Length: 336
Image (cartoon, rainbow, N blue to C red):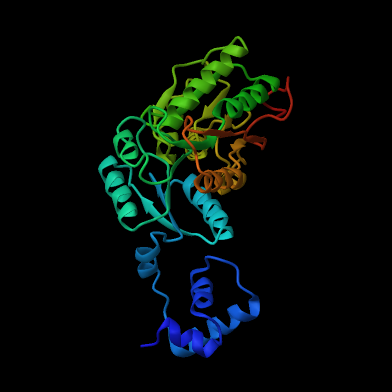
């Protein structure tokens, strides 16, 4: 079996150069890297990253744990994080907690056991996920992203929900909509809490309140479909959804009921997932700027936090106005 010394001899370089090339831990002259890779291929040498991690206590790998990879928001965020990690010569180890705090705790332990150099987590439950997150504080660099647990346990990167919903409500009010309903998730996670608070605060700034009690279910299309049957169209002229998945279900549910969007009621989402621009009608939504969030996550992981308070980075989102909301005020349904 070929060894690293065999590769170095054939390539005409030092073993440390071979190690740097194969581990991608430091930059190497292109010609030297080419020789090393060619020699490794010729000899059939396979670099043992696990053995290196045991020797150096570094794996050049970051663990990431999300609550539900089937939620379209998370693949977009994961992809953005992976791109930023690649730019730092780091690899990503992705896990799904399956919306289960016990699975989440096991996944976190598994990531630590595999000697990842840091963890990026979007916790499933605002309260129940806190013990597993707290157990890692001081043991390994950890960043919470999008969602976070109760208390100031770790650094956090996410969207500025207040700024996002302020843009949504400002837009709807400017286009003549003042009787708003809110459809979102039950208050089991941070995003649900933050978004309900943001919409009520923003409405209050306009001297308004929700036209009917908030409808709280889950951040899923199926809930949007169900909630469409619970909108009181005699009282509501716009439906603000807590995420795009709910909004897409809402659009379909209203269409089934023969309700015109935005003629009878406007609909907005939050996230700007890829399906938002091609829904029928295309969805007005809040773009979360995943690339910026990913960059901040990686930056905080790589920069020592010191002994101060946990750091908070709230990224300001941007409103993407599309055909699910009217484009000008004082229009009749027939004109929209």
